[in-house]
Length: 461
Image (cartoon, rainbow, N blue to C red; front, side, top):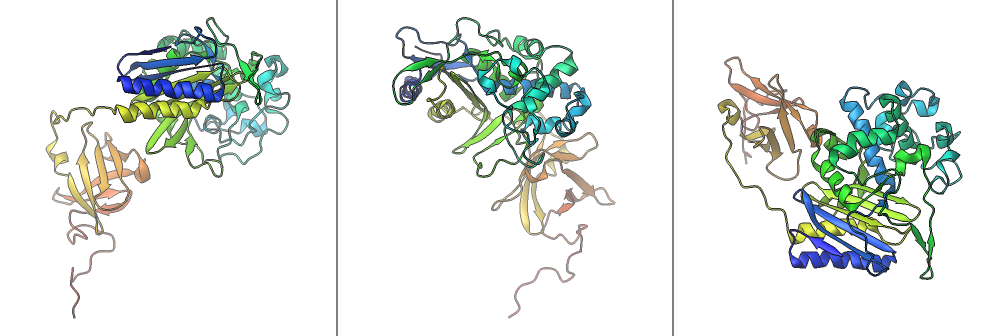
């Protein structure tokens, strides 16, 4: 089964071939995938071991830890409404969580930086009823911390149970109810549910050394639901991917979803190819940065990935406990589309108007002898970057007081000020205390330490 709207035949065949190869080599009962580009589903395809019964964009699969991204969005909504601060200790909003867990911050829990254990105490929570862990104490156990808080990223399923309980405490409703009202309904994701809703795939384990299968149980996870409960479809998850890339004022603004994509804690030793933000994974694939999340539960594998720069997203779902590498496949699907049919740049257009004083600031500026260029951007911001070699480039946004704040890189959060002489002319730019002048070591500017009185000179032989 395949469908497409706006991709070239060669691209469509490459996508289907990648999905077919993944299902065959991964020995998956079924595998379904879909790609979004330019705000719509651009392609979908599936392979199955049962002729005539391939899943489509409306078929539910369990998505495991992709659920965590939904929970993170709910927490960020609470932050944006002023009901909590990301630096708040959990105990402030969820009393009774204990001296170890209660002191962890919301930010640390979102980014898996609190030092919590990866899993709950035995028995294996994914294959046992949620009633086995009736209280939060049953989820975190007697010794919940195994790393110093805030020192590194260590993935923790119990951490997202705590965040789900935080949502319930501040909203006065169940996690599932808040999720439906605040995310699923506004985004039109009516095929994303806590419990399976037909048509849905059954979960299977495939024997590692023989081509035979075993059905897997599908437990209600109870308190662990915010970490991995949801069922969804490729169609719904592509809508969610579009939201995570661009934001939606009905759910979360663009600035807040961008904040979720920023790394939140140092990676574990040896993991330099990726990072974790606030409920979102980030990984490097060649020269491309991909964001999203993977998920697994007994009988199911899932991955959602998207490239903001390419405006391409991919979802891959399978009903196998192990086998198909859904993350690799999703990244490959994005690469196939982005490389074969790269995004068309927007037409260049001149600004509708410009402030003459601001225009006068553009051009070369010198930090000592190193030359930088200040450029006025189409959105009204500024870009400052070195003209030779590698250096500290940054974009800036205007503040109401006439200063500028750095948005990225070394100067993120730092202040750029225009310093004027007594006669009103521009003396220099002050960027985080660094002085930039129109000429290298301009003797007429207020340069700390001054400039040698004899000025520039050659080598006197």
